[in-house]
Image (cartoon, rainbow, N blue to C red; front, side):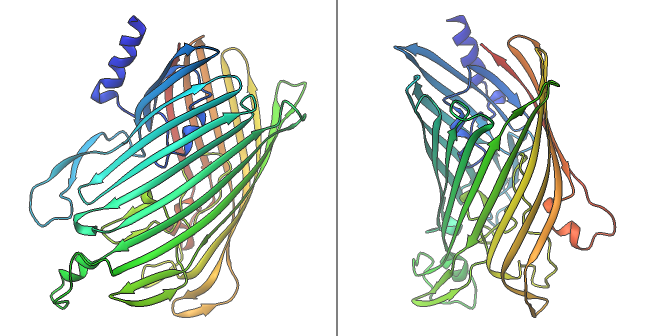
Length: 414
């Protein structure tokens, strides 16, 4: 009971509410049913996982917050795009709550993540996670829903990043697991209120549902993992990653007049939406992780837009994982080569271009885990490389541009 009170104290203390599961889209909930009970604090997440035994399994729950906010919990750097001079305070990370039941035969969990941007826009993400076949087959099904209000009333954005993992190490030597990710995004962006506020658009109903833009994207990510132990104390863990993502047609409705154009974004998610410009982050930049595949490189264009319509991305990464560990230290290093191809109808500086853009680069990803005592773990994550993660800095760079990302934290297991 004393331990439970201690855990609840950390969870409910406002300054300790940094997330535990979820990367802003609910994807990481797949680990919820498999992790041990713990308190975890990292650069972008703090939270807790606890449970009680029921029958031949356990009921578990988790609470915390997460987000790429560099440790920012509250700030007042916005006034909701209003014209007044009053600034409001906002809670920046995403809040995550999860609960579930796990046994040797089957496990099921549900989660909910909430991200409040400001009074104009917020994101809800319910998620379902399942494990079957002695935990060798695992699924995660999140649905992120962005809802607009006031400035972007009638705006609705939905995406999913369905993940399936099949662990083969119990049946096949060296071939350890397969992973499949399916991504789909749809956005209906209403800008009737923006048009109605213009002096040249008299008579436009600010609540009209017939003035909008629809965008859609799809993607598929396949990964195959291998493991080759050696007699030198080092495990060789290569894997292959193949990624395809594409923008589908954009449909624009101007009061009943429909215009259809080739899409310009292959990564539509509610979390990448900027309601102030009614646009998405076209770079599709990935978070700190292994198996990195480059996003859209910076391409000079006087209009400041990605000059590729009907854009698609094909990426292939060949990471080579190297792992060594003892009772106190575990080190994982992953050098990786990746090639990424971008295609579509390309118009650069007003001139159409045949062919495609490509990026070939390298990334080194590493994890260092130190366990000074049995139940305490220190963690350091580092990534560096020369692929086009920084986008626009590369095309006109006069010197080599390097990437350096890091994350660290601590976990207490009980």
